[in-house]
Amino acid sequence: MYQELIRRALEEDLGDGDHSSLACVPENAKGKATLYIKDDGVLAGVELACEIFKFYDPDLQVDVFIQDGARVKKGDVALEVRGAAQSILSTERLVLNFMQRMSGIATQTRELVDLTEGSKTQILDTRKTTPGLRLIEKWAVRIGGAMNHRMGLYDMIMLKDNHIDFAGGIAQAIERTRNYLKENSRDLKIEIEVRNEEELKEVLEIGGVDRIMLDNFSPERISKALEYIPESYEVEASGGITRETLKSYAATGVDFISIGALTHSFQSLDMSLKADFS
Image 1 (tube, rainbow, N blue to C red):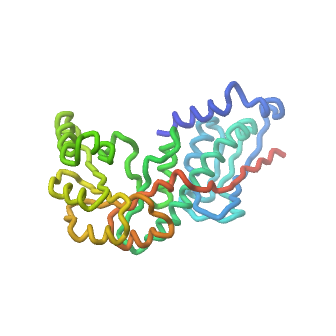
Image 2 (tube, rainbow, N blue to C red):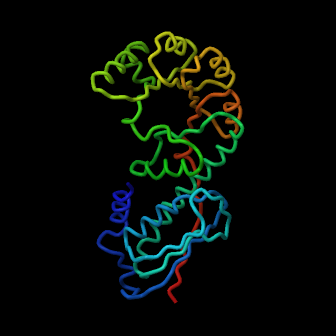
Image 3 (tube, rainbow, N blue to C red):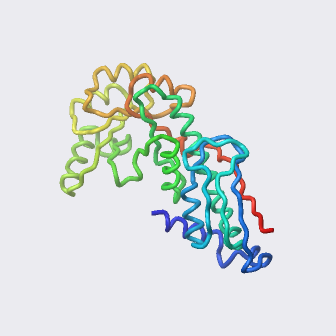
């Protein structure tokens, strides 16, 4: 699943060769490298790191001491890799880049998920990911304890303001969508965004959707809306929800809260891969 991503990433970094290592390190030199954690957080990317080492050099041996999803602190040792020194040096930066990024996402995600503890609300990510890195960023979200919303434009229908406006209104957008799915024999869930109570009431009168997104509703407005939205609908809150307001949104009892910041605004977790070729 991740082989093509790894291949492209290695090609981007290596080009026609790791000339620094080729120049300084004998071809038959062996050694090990230890991955040290330099920040407190949630570890993610260990499984991917093992895949990278294996993809580049199947003879590399990896000993994993801390698994994905574990809380880590500065000074912890996550893994050791042993084998050809040239192979270790050529994969070092790619492993760190992926693990630091994934661990940063997982750490922030876990912090936000913890804020909703005790509620029924599930935290979702969005499509606000780095182009080409969506698979690993959404993987990190899952490691952090949240759920993936949709992987792309292909696995769920989401009717947002632009779709509705282009279609000529809510009724037309829903009708066109249902006809499209029927004509193309596709079984996809339909979610629709509403911007105010009038649009919400129109959606409820028409029906034909699975999930309703309340966009930029305050917690008070969401609580009132949930009083008359039938339980047959999934309800999602989105837009302007911050770390400071998250608890109040979760307290409404809404099914989902989607947060784009999970994958577009985070701090990578610092770590290093220290080599020992003595």
